[in-house]
Image (cartoon, protein in one colour):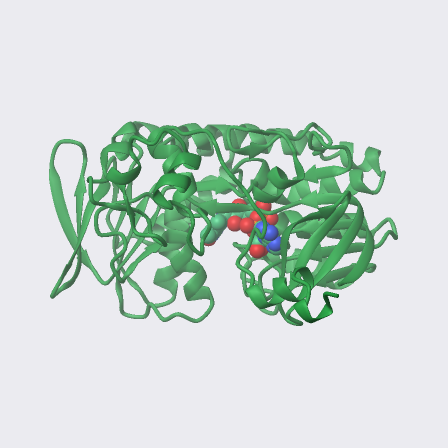
Length: 429
Ligand SMILES: Cc1cc2nc3c(=O)[nH]c(=O)nc-3n(C[C@H](O)[C@H](O)[C@H](O)COP(=O)(O)OP(=O)(O)OC[C@H]3O[C@@H](n4cnc5c(N)ncnc54)[C@H](O)[C@@H]3O)c2cc1C
């Protein structure tokens, strides 16, 4: 297995990783950015390197082009920890494993979508909201498809507007938060975050022909001759709407698996960092959604702070603290406004599948008491996604706190692992 050594290694090439790499590289130290995707940009700027859609993305991709001393390793999945200050990486383009050594590590691993089990959610045509957006960005055609976007958070409007721009016919955007909270959030934006308010208004204007219903959530999905029939409730009444594609997302959950393997402290599902963006382990920093869901601006500023501190430029980093703190306060407000309602815990029916890989039903796990027990006794989370979808859902549904993370963090062909780890029997004496 080949070994590579860098002063600073960054995992994740989204806005946080890009911000960190650009600033760290200014010191002249060697920097490597590792990302599982085929190109840099993370979730929001996926596929935009050659044609950025916003001025902000354009600016950062220009910075990427100018940055010296940075190696951008795409299609490289970080599978786990190999030794002290050493990561095990699967380079997919060369189908081989390598060890990456670092002085400082910046975790910018982003977030995953919270996709809650609903009766019928395994039917063809039902997607995660961000998942459908990611597919559309990668070429999946939604043109002329009737689409419903349901769940929670500002991401719903962003996804709906994007799908509409790709030719989809948006039938409904359904937000589970009550009107009072959505209204309070909009008012907060108007007073304290006017640019974001204007962005929200412009998204709503783009979607002016699409109803935006608040205080309602999907409870069942059926397959009919007319496509999918989605049944919604507001807690009192029920109504249904038909569509070809349903995009469902109940917010985002920090992707802390690597942080956990390294042994960093987590709290409320997020990586704990201090003002320097440093985790409980010295020399290991965190930036962006892994430290809590807060949006692209926060990811960028935290990435820059982590990048400067990782190369010892503490004073430059400190100049960004105020901005970061203000953005984090706004993120806390966002979390409260779109907090998930208790009723969502009662949506799954006894035979609703909760683990899509292993076909485990709600009834099979409800009394098991922990994610670990659900894994051991019902195979929940033992399939190809390794609990990446059902894990966050179970923690929300049952308030289970435990999480078990094991390498490899991302699916890896057995052949690649065998070549390195299983000795050839013919070598034995
Ligand atoms: C599915 C989805 C869709 C979204 N769509 C929008 C949108 O339309 N508009 C909007 O404003 N915000 C959107 N967001 C939120 C937005 O992505 C974030 O606000 C912002 O991109 C956060 O940046 P980040 O750098 O922290 O994380 P990300 O942009 O998520 O970047 C994290 C990167 O880490 C990589 N990574 C993680 N683990 C590993 C590993 N083990 N090995 C290698 N690489 C790894 C991932 O491949 C990813 O590229 C979306 C989020 C998600 C999850």
